[in-house]
Length: 371
Image (cartoon, rainbow, N blue to C red; front, top):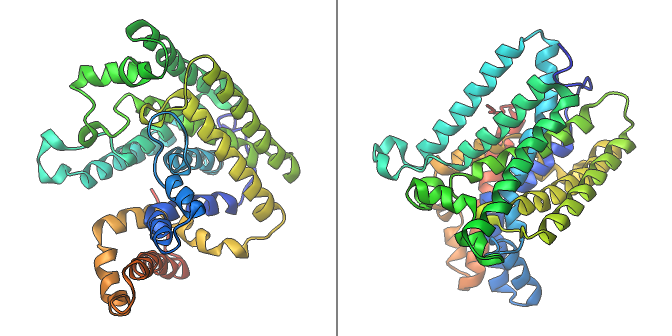
């Protein structure tokens, strides 16, 4: 059964690993380094960078707003390669489905554990965790490609996206006033969360529970990217142009969505936000693919490659092990001799370095932990 993926190209796409590593870098201390750097060198440039490593408040889009949808995008981009490999090995579609569902359940379980499940305080467990939402979005998108096939997958993805868009666009005008205020008070996500008992960040996440449906579209955009990169018969140049073209289409879609009254609003994961993130994701992957996979200039990105090859590992490891506590024992002596702002920069940089050295050790030993 090959129609499920429509792809045959084999081999690892380094640009996906590097982009994943770049994305994870901000979560393992990169953002803190920027903040510490701004304290050492206060100026308009560093203050702008500090704004970009925080989420936009209300309507708008900052660099930090890209991190979560980019993880979903990259999870989707990897799926056509994994699916094609499993199909070539003779794994049935039912077997692939069970594996994928098991992965989703494991991600959801680990996410709940990270947010207190094993404390047995079930009233405050965050069930809509980051890992759980990534697992859900990826699973639904992955099943669309598996069971619908490459030709019908666009219709499957469109149904999810436009259904979500319809709920987001229509209900604010029914239940609340027009304009931005409606998106905070009268949108379907808020109404749904209120029905569950209110938007409780510690229980459903900062974006609420219904936002998980939007994650399917972010992951589906990644699947389209993976199909472009893995399809046999396309030249490398056409793959790159395809990614950049998809970025342009998402950009146009975002402008149309915004013009029809749907703003870019991360806190409720609006459809325009999905498209803006998709614009950036396709563009970044397209440029990296050209530089790294087509032209072969990959050595400069080794730092990010090491992170990207074990991104899941460091995500869990930094939750289980206090790198700052260990880092203060390693760098604290030197830091105590420096002015406060320089000491903070040294410590934050040291924390990132320690995490990276752990990943480098695993990389050298060829130990890669994935689900």
